[in-house]
Length: 208
Picture 1 (cartoon, rainbow, N blue to C red):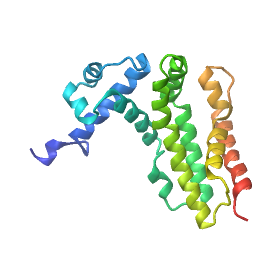
Picture 2 (picture 1 turned 135 degrees about the horizontal axis):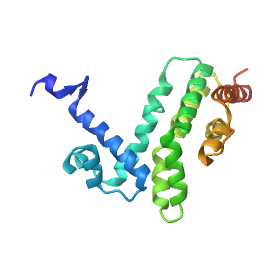
Picture 3 (picture 1 turned 45 degrees about the horizontal axis):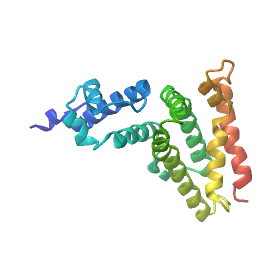
Picture 4 (picture 1 turned 90 degrees about the horizontal axis):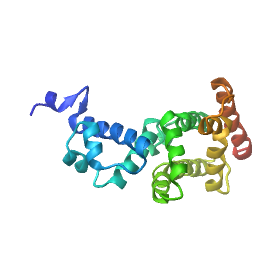
């Protein structure tokens, strides 16, 4: 098979199919919760069930991969924190990307679903936490550790500091979106709030 036939829009066919599976599975999980079969995913994605299993061994791995893929789409990965930017530039980019992820339609719908199913399906919440928030916090904490070693930040407990900034960023906009309450902050107000969170963090932990 030629290289041209293996690639569509610059992406290998296997990767194209994986993205189809991501999109299909994400929508099905949002529609039905965890009560989704691999057959349904295959049908929605327009691929064979064997193709789904060749990429994801089981439904747990597929769900986790969908959560991780959403983080990747907002650059919330280890490599994001490895770029050559000043501390403030990096924190601002992270804060804006994280805020965008929090306020995205898929993230809001998934959190509502997780809250609704938390009592009778806590495993779903656990999978989400481990694949999304916990991974992001670990990556961010690693970044803070590296900045402490370089002298850019002065933090005694980077785990606490990571939680402080991540939770501070959520603010009113996330709560209004999650509860579908009108009258939340405007995009401009939210942007100013996110930047203020970063500046407050730097006043607390910035190196003298």
